[in-house]
Image (cartoon, rainbow, N blue to C red; front, side):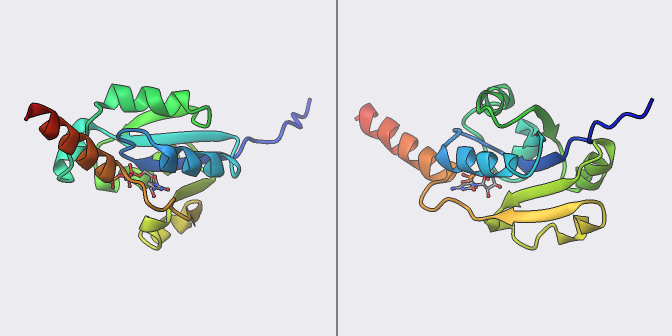
Length: 142
Ligand code: CTP
């Protein structure tokens, strides 16, 4: 018997997703419009250190926040810069989407799937939130 069920469109994205904020949520909501299943590779705590970042939330907390967003189906660890091609092939990814701050950076992955960049939400970032928290903590110490 022929199976007429269409294959689900599988999307992938990458990022740290520290201090999960409205910019993250808006991006994931818009990405989910392009796919049925959304896979996020969130940077591991070790990879963040390699990138010169120290995340406020550890990987397990960031993973939980992503899954709680209602837009994300699966979360895995990003451990190194050059794993994307393997991830795309392993999961049979149809579309790779990132925020516009990465525009053009991953165009070479076009060989394996569609590559798209969506406009970043202005005025908010994990870095800004981290700075605010640090400032508040310092003020409270006085
Ligand atoms: N992103 C977005 N709008 C924002 C912040 C992030 O669309 N205001 C997107 C990024 O373009 C990326 C994804 O969210 O595709 C994850 O980004 P991440 O670097 O984890 O978030 P930032 O807030 O940019 O973190 P940082 O300040 O550490 O760079």
